[in-house]
Length: 289
Length: 220
Image 1 (tube, helix red, strand yellow):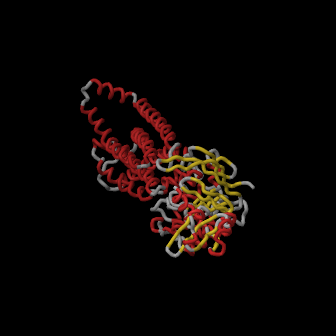
Image 2: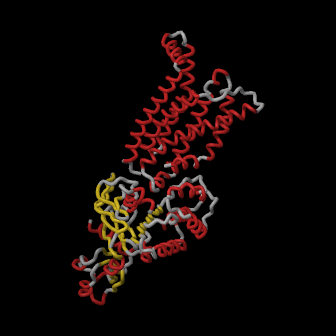
Image 3: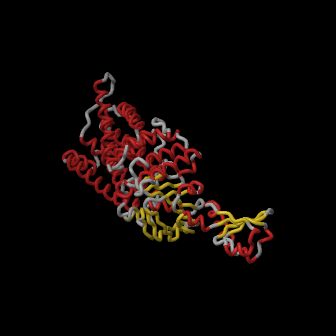
């Protein structure tokens, strides 16, 4: 399966933070959710892909080509939405669009107009007068109006209301009807990814915890609930991490067979969501540290 | 590349309006016979400085440099466009001054206004070129903050420097060095202009290479 985005052994050193030889890939036709807590390295990775940061080592290939050597060509086909709005605050939506549009060979004005209407973007309003959600909508309209094949979203939903978040997911779903496209969707709001992501890459403290097909990840992890007195020194080791309260315990585990054989029907087994997996994994690492 | 230069102009409509008003003020101040020599050059230098500063600071003000660098442009093009837009700014500021100058000439306003001359352009190119040569490497290195200090320093230097220097040379006409200099200049005006242009171009080229090195390796 060909990859629209490939990251191999990518590393970057900062004072107090390192991105340690991370690798993951997004195949054509799929959406990859890029999850992790704040400061895990999501934005750093995206900035490296966009060549805003210089990598210390490793390789990034977009559309099968080196991201620095073919930077200009590659960026013609990348649509990006960043968490922060970095546009000229004193310009209106239309003026800003007029500045950006000529940079793209395949800029499609009717498509932009359509999104502008769909998102209710006020053409004459200055960027600084837009709400955070509106700014994101503007970025999204720009990202979707030049027939980009790879869409890179860095925490786009954090400033959005649930209705538009849902609409964004719907747009991405529409986009993915075309199998020549791909999406890298970084977020810490994991329920969004539960709905649309095909792959999940989980990064924490500059390391990839896992990068796999979402359904396989969801099948692999379970939440176990039970009374605290069931926990022993020995069976604690079977869990990735345990959260205890006076009413009982909840824990994340991989394979449930050994737990079931020990505790049988005395515990409840539930499927873990991405949120659970992220939270418990981070906690587990902290506990073991 | 052209888009980047065009963008630098599009983002400063307000500054252009200000430039028109400012040039009227300049004609008023520089209408005295002793200063009249410098009206076009100093006016153009001041307006160019203002346009350059507005354009450069806008990119860093909202971190728009992040968006620009994410567009399909090479970093080298971003650097090159900044140097090239200098020429556009000089042309623009000259245009503003010439238009305002002509309007004042046909108007009943009591200022004496002369036509622009070639040396006006040479002085402007020299002053703006030197500013850009120092300003841009600092700007690419520090992201605009320290560049402003360079800017203010140069603004003072370039604004008061040449007329002070000229005044000094004229005053000390008896000094042998001044005599030689004045004589040579008056006899070989074109050579002096060419030397000034050449020096500016060399300094600009060195500055461009430094800026390129800084920006190509910079983490945004």
